[in-house]
Image (cartoon, rainbow, N blue to C red; front, top):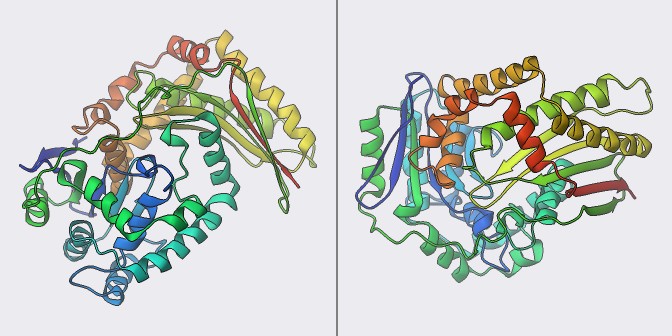
Length: 421
């Protein structure tokens, strides 16, 4: 399995390449997401992403939309324009011709390099971001639960910021504040280029051509003192919400963990797979009452350079079943703390994670781009941690699973309950 190649231009801009004759993915990443939103301006990173993709100094908004539609389809097709907690990325999904990529990459480069903040675009995109807040945020319960879990787990940690926005704060963001955000974060030392498909030399030429003459700038500092990276919960924190119009009761139970580069990372990922497997079997497969049950049980791990958490999430139309299932969840957590997992369970989950990792490097370039983005934005710029994943996964043992369960599954957690109003 061929590793990702990386190098740095003289001005500090890093670029990544991975040769692939079949598919091509490219784009420009910024180490700036909702974690980096200024205080009182949550939604800044997301709004900037929306506005600067409207037009370039060479192309009108119509020409940009037409180009994107031609090669990437509509907004939810092969466009890889995205903001998350720790990054913003301007690029595309898999294109089948190198020529298509060579036409799209300069457009994204111009958006990032020569960002245009048009006041009219700001007004229209504030409206779009606000609607996204409802469509993919508060009205979509899985995302609402995820946001509420992060917000409830932390008091000061910026990982509690919603990725999309806070509507009232979004409304208050000014053009000058957006320009200040661009000047601070859209600098070579805080950016990176991903080119998957062409050779490393071709990737270097692309990075050099479009960004090589940018002046080097200091890496921006995050306005956060890192004292709440792993909050010390002293008691269970119960959050109850009533939502009119929904049909299910939603339940989540979360625990803080260490951050992205923790030595427990792979152990936590395997542990989450085992817990999800066990809860799926217990809550769904063993239920025999057609008036109760769940569709699925999810166990998620969320980590960045400032936070980490693991949480269980499921929903049921039966409030009684949710109460019963909470006891089942707590029981399974205790079992993981008392007894080593079965060798068959451990090996199955490690095999699954290994397969997903391999697939990213051979046949799923968009997934590989996501791995690079996550690594580059969370302290692993040289990808040493990413490339050593298989070795660390191999070292996950039954004892490490037992130790991690006892370390993280404490009596103090965040519990979220959402009931139909």
